[in-house]
Length: 498
Image (cartoon, rainbow, N blue to C red; front, side):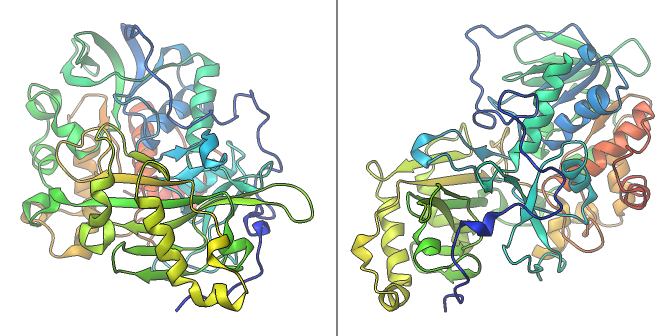
């Protein structure tokens, strides 16, 4: 059954009262979002990497960008011009990917990756609401608690100027902009080949696939499982790494779960010029499962809606029609529509693909009774402008944009792999984040996590795990103290306590 309608309208996306900022950053300011998150194109000639960095993040997901921002901007622990961020792909953000700046998508900000958080997750919540001053709103308009997520209220980022979702990538855009303004070195299309020892006792040499190298006093590898294991076998992590670290880097669900590498997480949004489920039917929250092809898992509260001005404003919107973490659960139907393995993003226009029309017809069938009760002719509803899909596969050849793969998920999908027997959460965290004794070389990524619960309440989310480990690395390697904006009890338990 469809959920009961709630009062219609775009007011459902209003910023939450008491959010940390009253206004969005002015366009062109250091904190203003980029035109499209992670959309920077490679220049005709790639710049050479600097010969030396005091601190280098390799991988520009949450942990990589945040660590560099903390060192250069927030704590001012190093000269910003000696702080470096290197990313192998064409964009910053990792598994956080906000699609924006597309006129054909009516200026909507659509998250095809990470998208929400709880205030109890002080990383990232205190960061977003504190120094980054980003407005928030409840993910579910009524602010209902999520029983499957620790019974917590979840939130998203907002743009008050548009009264619409800003996209989770906004936080990363802001930190990247502030790093650039401070003079840090940020570089895309820079793939790491190996990490070698430097004559200095604690330093490391980063060898790039293009043949260059960079000496770094401290290195944080914000690399997912597949990317780390693709490094040259003469890298320090494998030649000098402690035995437990080397064993755990090779320990994954692939060792115990058949066909795991063939699985994927898939997100699908249907984009309309008129968000008719809200404007015509008043559906602003609730979920509906419809497993027959094309399989749908609708969340009426997930997907941005942007309205014009006036007494009866037009409201464009994107509706989440599928979010599956396995092929069997609904992702498999959509895999053939993936346009390219070089990016998680696929956008299919109505005139170029059968999929928008196919999904539209099923939506009309599902809502036929409601439309009839409201006196609405389904033929009066324009077809969608596009389908926006996000593909996050587990395949080994997905190096730059694989699906999240923390082993903490294993207990929810069967027994732990044999290689984890006898390994505690604490020993797993220590070994994987600090693999080489005596070297200022660390690893922080959502994949390298064993603890089942991130805040004793909620399963680990895509950003929080990376940030907790990154903050612990900054404490251990650089001696950074708790940032004043971060909850003290959380820091003691969830950063120093891991």
